[in-house]
Figure (cartoon, helix red, strand yellow):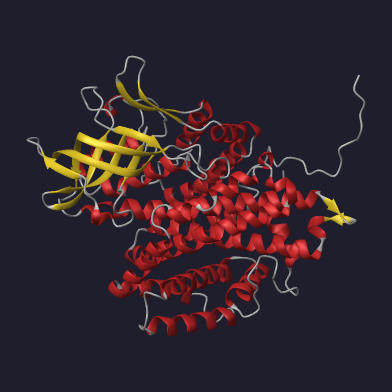
Length: 544
């Protein structure tokens, strides 16, 4: 019989079997702020149910399994026939089914649908981020499809279904479908106007034959894809189904799956088109304009995904430090560690508050709100997604060596953390998009200034930051080279304005002091010691 050599003590229990939604005070308050009172109780109830699912031991195990056993490509069957299928671990399908069932593809037709979905996406990301990719693209395809009313009438009920119907069959036979997107090519990357995939018109009205490739095509087992190709009239958007109406497979040749840093549960592929049937969406030559609504929606999901990853990283760090003792006290009670945790919590709350505000603008749908989104989405996408990686790394450090071990879950968050900054247009693309909005759409800047101006007079540091921002905007010299600085400032001022108006005073005070004022360090854990750091940590602590 083996002897017991020691007793394990002073270890934090797993952060499991808790409600991910209700444990996040900033998120709950944002939903209560933005959701119509008529659907608030229903929304809170469904979000709490999803929060309990996301925090359950079973779902957390599924998330680990989906990443431990990534998808595998099968190009041919046993007889040598080309099939181009991707096999996923059962955990992937279970997660995707839960996400679809929670309404993560059903925002466009529900009251308060975007706020409800945004909060749900943020919660569900904390269970497993990879399945958010097909959920995001399916949700985001609807604005593009609405450029063609006939296509929208045919496909929108399938896209917004809350039934996950896996397997490749004709879309008309399925209870629900998923969409993917293919824009970038080997020679062009973000410069989609350099695409060389060609589209030849067929006899059938609106039908084309595609020849070419896509360098990045996420979720290649989706039922259909929106892609860009060069038609006779210029770059055009097309719908490419995986299975045709007669039940035959469309030509969709998966060359290989990408071996990625993170996001390993989700398949990202290189695909070839060779006589592939497609249906035109919108007018020839207006492909970018047609698909831009999809791009904007996926960019907001990048913000939401990063906010979710940050929240989970911060929750894990605070949970660990609230239980772990060192040098005679709980880590969370040590002044220096408290400073680090408070700083991380502050970054997470600012991201969540901004993301939900943008979702509320989608629900409003008014001209002023649409103009605000034109600047605020790329600015938020630029800044929030860039803050995710340093937050995840710092949170892992809070766990010490334990945070570097896979079982803690932090390494998966660290690997996932750069993703949303890179996908759907990396940092320079976002910053340049902000410049285009500033120079070409004066109503967008007006909407932004109206929004941040609602907090004027409430904090002298915010007032000074707005004044400096206006000075920067008036200086056209070297604007492109300054685009990142300007975009960062736009995002920070907007976050500051929202927190001053809606967050507890200690949160707003800490943000304005450290992000907008002069008393700031370059690393986390450098907040002014005179701030109420204990309240910030207590507010962010998940209770299970």
